[in-house]
Image (cartoon, rainbow, N blue to C red):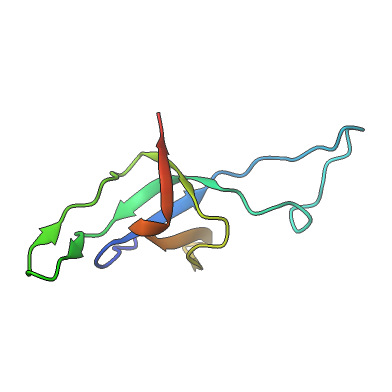
Length: 94
């Protein structure tokens, strides 16, 4: 599995089929990028200016909302993941 460094978080995007009002299913490349994902790995946290580590606010298994164009897509074991900085996460879905 991937182990993110620092304040990075590895996300697995939740794929949703998008339909138009007429019932037409849009191709995946025509859909907007999903903005919700499940956290699959979390880094150790951000190092502050005074040398202390700030623990991440999210944990593995959380469902989160993230900025639309945040992060980098990576493929690992034939799965696509998104690696983002914790600051790019907007909210935890409860």
